Image (cartoon, rainbow, N blue to C red; front, side, top):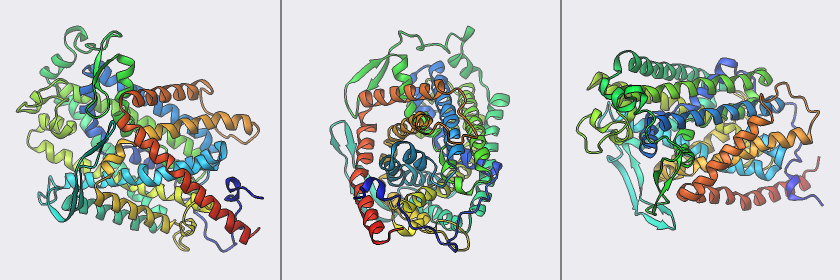
Length: 525
């Protein structure tokens, strides 16, 4: 008797008339998807939290160096898998082939439930928030339909609730962006790619402008003396091996003193999140020209560009603003990086350079950035659900393409619907707290799959082989596993809920696989 574990791969052969994905994305468009999906709103705000936790300019920049090393190793490793299996679904396919269909499904399930849709919701609502700089009536407190307030309640180390459910003018703007981008991407991947190319180029130029302004005219003696000092004495403060850093365990738990290695792992929650989504180009492999060459190249070039820019932007903040600051300071200089208003470090930096015009300039840059990021995530995510459906592990309609535009229409619409619900519920912000731990687990499994496939399929065609194999992939696994262990110990509110969301996918997988098995028996090949 056929087991549910394998039944889902038994599919009816496609008819000659069935539409197929069209390879229209060139190297530039593929790289734009990598860059555009990575750069959202994170780089403009997470530096404040990193600065507070590290309290050291050297460790503050060191956090970004670690993020850069891990992300680049991940991109190099995924390059081999992408060249070996250039199929729609990307990481879902790699996990399925290396570790089995359950692991591929759990990734796709978590992607749909939290990772992709939650990020799209957060980025779209961030668009609405910054639109309020130009139109004050667009605000999270300007309710058009307030349904309910869910008060905060605590379960162990986790705080749940404290959500406003309804439609404000800010999340309405986000909802409209999400719906617009879903509709646009129905009309062909080429149109979505054009939008991605335009907005990625614009956001890259805006970040480059921020760096140039900071280095050329924004440097201040106050920031230099506070962050670097004479002979770089201030730069290395609190960065010694025996330096201890306070970390609050869980929500409202005791404060623990940890060393440099632990604090650098703790702050990866922010920096890794800001540099995430680089794997999205693998989801669109079925629509990339010469994917065995272009996907590995776009991964390396895209991640390399973003990581260098992120480091330079964070360094630029140090040149303009002092790291240490007073939460009650009256000026951007007094508040510093650590206590920038609402953690908007980029806005504070431009405010120090341009004064009143700084907020407008940065709001415009973030509107461009968030719109482009949401488009890249929207375009890519639907391809994973398409691949899952083709394996009998998602709604059947999601595995069908538009006869004219060759796009997964149902996948785009289902993704959009769930994103809208997350926007209305206000739950996306809490869900995003759980992303990095779940993402790291899947990255570890996928890069571990690289070793499995080298053993299981030694003779499979590999147009590109991971540079530095096996040492660099093994280094990634060790680093990511260490971060997971540290987060489990010191930040359980970011870990156990994410793990629970992943495990919730097991009964769903059993349901879909059994349903697929029954369909296979009714319609044997």
